[in-house]
Length: 325
Image 1 (cartoon, rainbow, N blue to C red):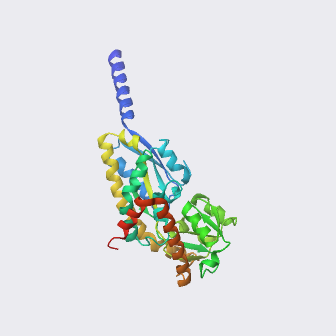
Image 2: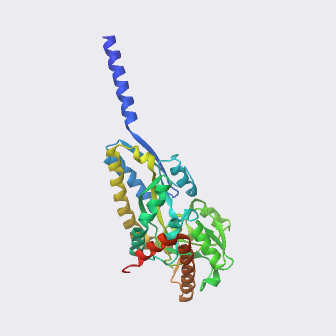
Image 3: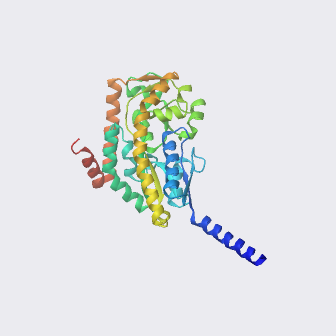
C-alpha cells in the first residue's frame, strides 16, 4: 500500500512538473500607467492570449515603466531579457528613419491618414525590426498631438526660449526648429518635471495630458493635430519561433484583435480627453493660421530631412502614402 501511494505521489509530482513546464510565460514591459488607453488595450491583449491558448501561454504586463523605462524596452526585447514589449516608434528615430516617420508633423494628421501611412510603412518597418532580431505584432496610434503651454502662442516665434519637453529625437528636432530649449523627459517623469519648472511647454496628445494631470500645471492646449505617433508591440523573433504552433496562433489572433480594438479606442477617446481636460480648467484653443503656417514649414523641413536620410526606400513609402490621396 505504501509503495502504491508513493508511486502515485511521484507520478502526480511528475505530471505537475510537466504541466508547469508546459506553460509558456513571458514578460511585457510598457511605459504607461494603468489609465492609459494603450495599457488598457494591453491588459485585454494578455487576457486574450491566455484565453486563446487555453491557459498555456501567460504574459505578465509590467506597466508604468516598472520593469524598464521607455527607451530601454526595445533593447530588452532585442536581447530577450523581455520576450515582448511595447515601444513608441519615434523614440528610436536616431536608429533608422523608418522609426521617425509617423512623428513628422503634418504628414498624416487624422486617423484615416495615419492608418494609410502605417500600411505604406509596414513592410519597411518589419524589414528593419527583422534585421534586429524582432518582429512587430501590432501598432496603435496615439490621439493627435497638440501644444501644451501656459503662454499665448500666436506664431512659432512665441515658442522661442520655452523649456520644451522632448520625448523623442523627433520632438527634440521640432524644438530646435522653433527655437525652444529641448529637455528630454519621458512620460513617467513628466508630472515632476512640470511641478519643478523643468519644462513649461511641449507637444503631446490629450491622452498624455490627462494621464499626467497636465491641467494642474499648464492651462492651455493648442489643438494643432500635428501627427499621430504609433506604439508598436514587438516580440523577440527567437522567442516567437520557439512557441508551439497553437501558441503562435493564439498570439497572432490576439494581436490582430488588439490592433483593431486599439485604433478604435484611440479614436473614440480623443474627444473624451479634450472634454475632460477642459472640465479640469484646461483651455482648448484652435491654433491661429499664423501658428499653423509656421508649424507646416517645420513639417516640410523635417520631411525633406527625412527623405534625405531614408533614400529610395523612404521615397517609395511617401509615394505609396500619397497615391490616390
